[in-house]
Length: 332
Ligand code: 3PG
Image (tube, rainbow, N blue to C red; front, side, top):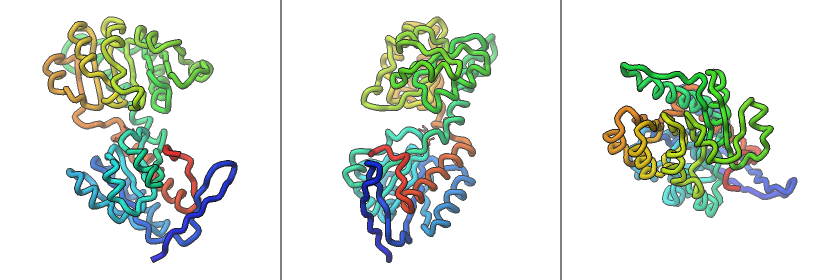
């Protein structure tokens, strides 16, 4: 059984790990509670097996114990929103790399991974189009009274406000413009207005202004310590009459009590989300047609997105083991 002997070399001030010995008998586990499309799994299998590694599959698992057992022997792990906790990392004695096939990696305990020397990567941009399409579909769904009888409204001419201008935010903006929307955006990490202007998008100066002008507010912020519960009462109350909050990001960024309070005081406000809130039952009962949550997160649930993100994850694992490439590492 070949062993892996990594050594470190200083190159352009970056530490690059090269595996010098034969890297064979590697076990790569795809652990997806919400499985990839079949074509994506087949594509992943091809990449992994062509590299001489073994592919293991754990799909639709229902219990954490199944994941703990499945990771015991594996060297690499491909996941979606699956929770990779300190306990999972502890159980995965041979684990060297985790790739989150997707953008948000808030489901991985980065500190625990770093302590164990496990590399964590994401696959940014690979499923963005699917999420962006869903965001626009959600706007139309709410504008047309959730496809129930009655007079709806159009997106054309309305202001689409994009909160965070990353891969998904940009695509939502582009699609909104194609529908004739007036697109404005704010991103705390992008200070150069030229970035927005290059896309024909108006950069607003503050998050307050963004919400104040939003007929549709599309959320694309990650779930971090700073953003947790950051969207609540004040922001919603500042939105124009009839405004809709669209969440294809994370439920953790929402202050649910605050949103509920605002929607109780303002019967014109609407909220649609791809990530069911903790208080989903109360919201459904209280707000009727003004609230909708998808039964299971489906932003990235397209064959195209699964193939893009899944195959990228497999390639990144092989590239890491063979060439030491850490381009998409998020716990450097
Ligand atoms: C992401 O962060 O990439 C999306 O939320 C997709 O998540 P999923 O792979 O669980 O559908």
